[in-house]
Figure 1 (spheres, rainbow, N blue to C red):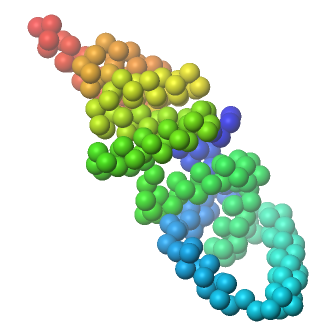
Figure 2: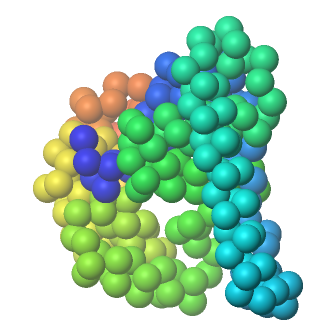
Figure 3: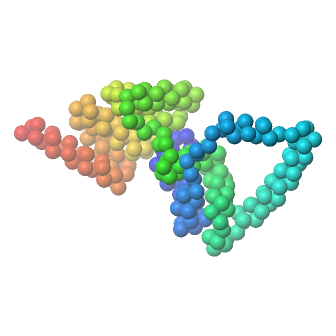
Length: 242
């Protein structure tokens, strides 16, 4: 499946499986813990780097030295990557991180690696992309994801997050339209049906909400929240009839 057509939840689960296949299931959590939220200031680091530069001969010498070091590191990394799981488990955290990054790139590509690392950073206390706390934030996310989707209209997670932002500010028809776009791209996406059901519920369109929750359950029978929400809707409909 195209990485862009995966939800964050699906990407995270796939990334965990890919890592477990190479590192061993007991080492996956160790890798995830190493994905720390970024705290650096690029502009400050860049100024420090420029201030420490010497003349052209010195720069060339540094480049050559770094190239030799990098080539040696690459050889060592390739040897580590080829080791069996029982040897990988004895490695340092940094080595585990390096091997994990490589296997994620090999299996998921650069976009998959970046997406998986971002999710891990959020789990480790970083800023959660798409988490909305106020109306202004919701409107900013709508602009962000609209730009992203204009550039590439197949990014499933951005439709979901823009839909969530629309829903937050009460624009439920636009939210439903975004969740419907996800379903067009991914008819098997249970998460999109659950989100659309919530938007229908906000519009008090109980029949459509029940229909979407039923589809979400069909696609993901382990979705306890969908069962609960649909049950509540059945009770509400029964009360209204009575």
